[in-house]
Amino acid sequence: MTEVVLHIYDVTNSGSEKTNNTIMQINKIFKDGMGLGGIFHSAVQVYGDDEWSFGFCEQGTGVFSCPSGKNPMYTYRERVVLGSTNFSIFKVNQILRELSREWPGHTYDLLSRNCNHFCDEFCERLGVQKLPGWVNRFANAGDTAVEVAGTTAMRFRQAKTEIVSASKVAYRFLLSAASSPPVAPDTPSNSGRGAPRFQGTWFKNLVTSGAKPSSSGSDADKQEGEAVLSTHSEEDADTPLRQNCKTDS
Image (cartoon, rainbow, N blue to C red; front, side, top):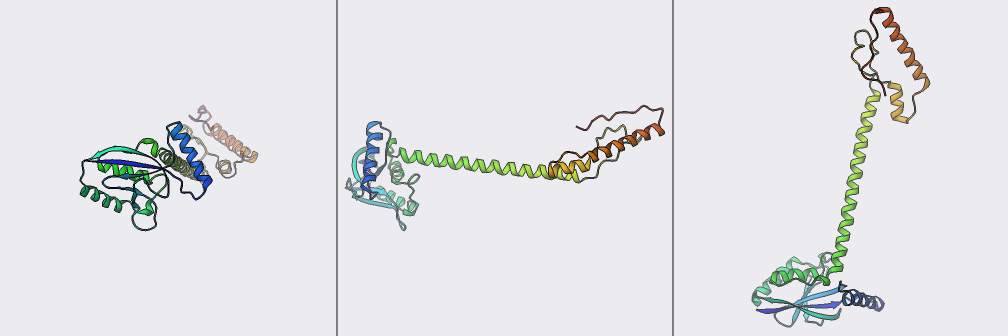
């Protein structure tokens, strides 16, 4: 068995002294003062004096090593013992070769695939506990926020698409109904069927322009109704008029 150690650094490689000092203050307040987390780099030491971590590069693997606690790009903070692994040095080297293939440098992402995610994966394969939650809490929170925002935007787009589709279907249905010929007026042979009449001209105007029915259309309907009543009176004077089962709303 051999000990597995996590080395943690403050991220101070921005190239700006002001920014680096700001990061140091954030880590001091949120980690040292509140125990929540901060902006950190981490690396794992197992067998030997080197530590292993992950970073960005355009080609090849992003897995690299350097002397433990002496990465020149960051400011060293502390070490945390994560336990002991039962694997031999041969097995550990095999795991590192596998990780080197699986973690190319161009896949690095500050929020979802950074050095702390790599160390978590490495520790899991070594059979020891993962990193303390505060080490990568800020990145995980940022990644979750981005994911939630993306999911919400996707749902809004889906809802918008469904509304537009439903509107098109309804519009085509109304337009089809407006363009269909009106039903023939009631006669003695069909007056008892109770089928409502569509006023074709008025309904089409309503769909296309939102206009109210014109007075001329109402006069025409009135005259048509009088003609129907006249027909009933002349041809079937002894039969009382029957009302339709439905009325136009």
